[in-house]
Image 1 (cartoon, one colour):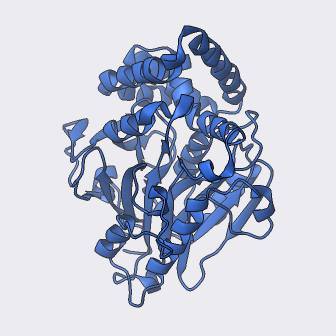
Image 2 (image 1 turned 45 degrees about the vertical axis):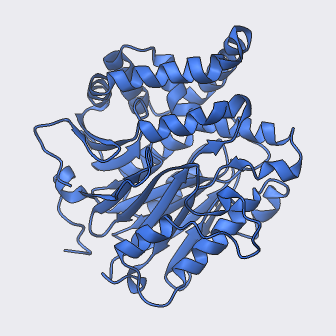
Image 3 (image 1 turned 120 degrees about the horizontal axis):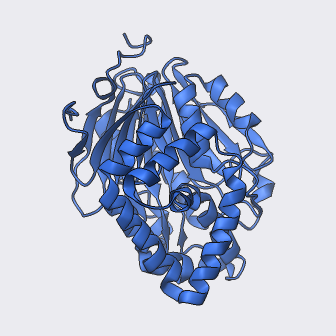
Amino acid sequence: MKVPSSQPVTPAEGFVVAQLSGDPYEIGLQHGRLLAERIQQMRRTLYQDLIYRQGRVFGVGFTLLCRAITAIMERHIQPELRQEMRGVADGAGVGYRDVLLFNCFDDLLHALVRLVLLLVPPPLRARVGLACSCFVALGERTTSGHMLLGRNLDYYVVDGVLGADGIVTRTMQEQLVCFVIRPSRGHAFVSIGWPGCVGVVTGLNARGLALACLTSAVPGQTPNGTPLPLLYRALLQRHDTLEAVEWGLRKSRRTIGNNLLVASARDRSAALFEFTPWQVRRVDPQDGRLTTTNHFQTPELIPSQNGWVIPNSRQRLKRLSALCALEGPLDVAQAQRALLDTTPPPDGQADQFDCLYNPGTIYSAVLAPEELRLWLRATDRPGRPFVELDVAEALGSSRPAAVA
């Protein structure tokens, strides 16, 4: 797919491509103006269909709680990103505190999900679908000789206050945006996100650095840190090597547990960073591959998740590892098919979230960092195709030196 330079917003199959450029406030103002209706709809959904769904008393109390927590997080957000969020608010005609809540909501929601898990028996925990899956195959494991990163972003809580009959999942599926951002400072990049959100959960920059994050729950969190999507935005815009990302991750204040898979064209390699608010561990590729879902694999961090690992995460990791270990090199089509895999576990007692592609899948994406290409598949309705985006062309960038 080519991104027309004359059209700041381009419709695609189940998502839109939005082009933004300039200094932080200008980027935010463009973002807010171009996607104003979508941002306002996101706000209505957040308050009417989610927060105030349980009644006014609950809604007011929950809103005050969220704003108190986000006020603590705000102190750890870089000034440039706060300026960008103010631009979004001004452009869309919504409050800055609402945009701040959008950008902290992932950290807030996952912390609250962990609280809810304390109140339900272990057999029911499997019904909470934090079901992301991600892999990297290095050049020796691909037909092109260039690495591929594949990821499913999944977000689903079945019911209750946080689930609201799947409203979070539906909204995220229906409001998908591929941002093409050319900042006045730092690397240009592409981010797959949503209206009003300036953070990054899946992204690829002009230097060939790609990243994808996955929740990895731990029994404890702190608001005294940077909301992770905003931290990842800063890493993607500033860095192009694995070592630089690791340094930035370790020196930051972190809020919740996460698995961050990073691929670097400059290094021609990848790394998985598993971390809590207090510890960071790096996992390097084995036999040219890395796979991760929603739990830790490093021995030092495994004990921190005792009783907190959702069982379907282990099933998905087992299936994903098996698919990546098949003989022969991997191509883009095979990577896409792996993300759409619905094979249940062999024991025949599958939960719907045991599958890589499941009811909580928001989108599937394959990224080729060394080629500056990505393929994105929306899930707002069945049968959507993968849409290819030439990131180099979209960003007006040359291919990384490793490929050129």
